[in-house]
Length: 112
Image (cartoon, rainbow, N blue to C red; front, side):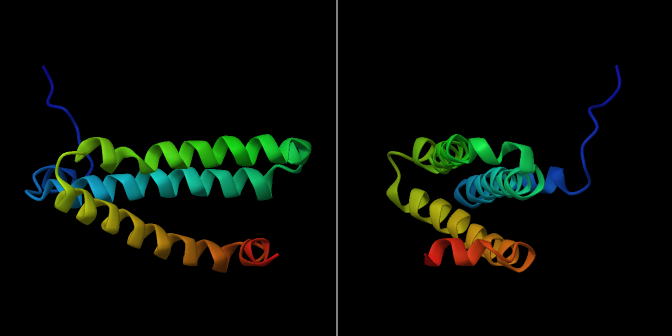
């Protein structure tokens, strides 16, 4: 039977001893992926503009569900929950700043 193939660096990531950082980074990856997909659909598929409200509601609900991963992982450990959430939120903020550079109308949407 063949060994399971993994991406380079994944073995070290899953062997990371600090579970709160690992969950925070995974949460960031999932939420950033959902946010990027949301932006690509919103800006790249003009045929779905008529469903903008439903699209935004569904994407927002998905992101909120993904942000609950640290809460469900560490609901009885507030220090680990704080570290995990802070890690995910900090990395997500950096991702949002990068997205503002790529999508020029993103920051003006929040100002109105």
